[in-house]
Image (cartoon, rainbow, N blue to C red; front, side, top):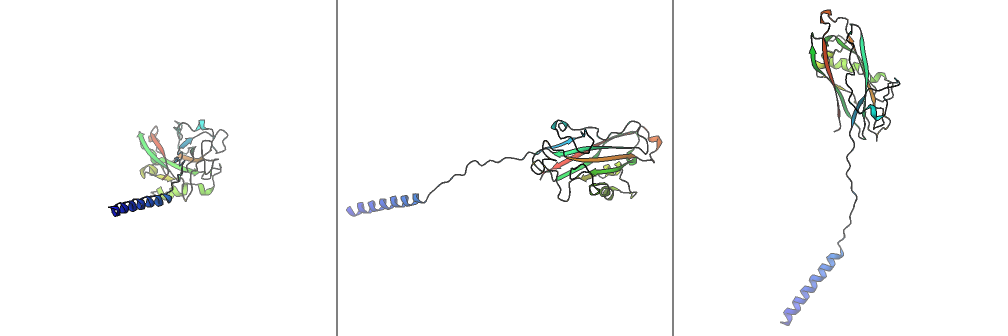
Length: 225
């Protein structure tokens, strides 16, 4: 009986020793304050350039609403006349936009078809945002190569709409920067970049098509993947 009690005592002492040894090698350290904050993604448009220097006014009040009728002709638009205008784009948040395109879509025609006689004569995107459009920022050669289906060295509104054209504005690794990359161009006080499009009513426009109207939507797609 004494041997049994002695064995039990030795066993219990062994368990206590093992527990104490295990506890000696256990330690917990906490890393606190781990915050997961999403970036601010905000794409904005403006048409305000009060001093006509091809650089947008930066104040946020000019970027709050979505512009409409940016490219709208006068009601007496005649063959040979051109209409051009500039729209400004910016990444108002702190996230860069590396994928940025413009899509031109027909939203309805009234009267005779006129898209075939509206020629895109200028297409420039101020990629570095300095207000000066260099030759390498001229989009027209690229558009001629992609959409001039009848090889007449013209890109008409009809060709752009028919091909569901998607004009790539940021390319070859360029970005529409957010405030962290470039706070002069991006962010809520940035001036963004300018896109100029100019359209001409061709001399070959049939006089019997006078009074016709085509309504076009310009869709900008800003994607961060």
